[in-house]
Image 1: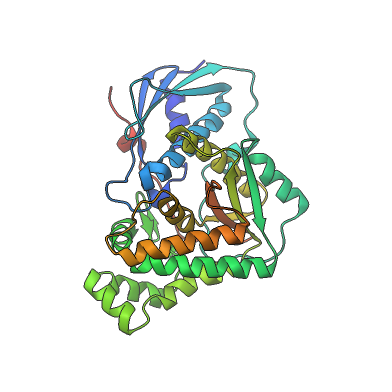
Image 2: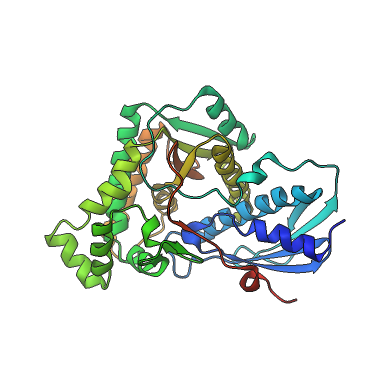
Length: 357
């Protein structure tokens, strides 16, 4: 049977679910011994990467799937539904837990150790068993497209090189980067520690100095080639140094925010399955997000040059995938064998995440 102590243990595991820039867009409420309420929110009011809250909704799905996995450690079955009267800006997910004859989910062991690897990985190809496991993890509502040969990885590297130029020259993105990086840190409870960003120490120091102001960024980018080093270290080299890039596509186009929540469920299973297969993973969501803007006719920036360039980037991405403009993309990442990162994002404690009814 469930009780409050058990629910606290489940939530203590579930809080390790991934979220964009470690924003953790949720708070927990224990309603009863069998009922948890997840109070979701999004970051679209300040984060350009959270287009219409999609990134946060994907994170909500990852959290709900992690609750389900964690519950199996206690012989409990988890089922969730959206609370009536709540909407995409502040959804409340009611999670009910019931006893069941369940073995612990095999992915349980990887919930806390799963993390982002932004450094170069081995280029050793995926095995047939690894690819099959990844494809099976996302269920029948999603498909995976793999980009494995060196020629395709070079094309992805070019896509990310171009995408990174927009990311590094967009003022709206600059404001996000300045907010979510914790400089000089190896670990961070609610941000990305600078040592986990993926650049060398000299570039980190330079980035910290440059990001002091947008005026400084503009000068550095214009006259000193300021985007070159970070693009090489954060985008091109990692794109080349991996086993494969993987694009997760919905079988049907999303029609509401819950479709993005379900994408988050599949994403978390993909990520944990990769970890179980001995692989690390790094999301590569910027081209996906910028394409969401472009294909919905929405501006990314007050700078019209960024918006025009995002249209070109979307077309480039579609050509890489042999798709048209209506094809839905949910999640893009790279995978491969690599050492465990020495630096990573942590999580807020339950004392912060838990709400009082």
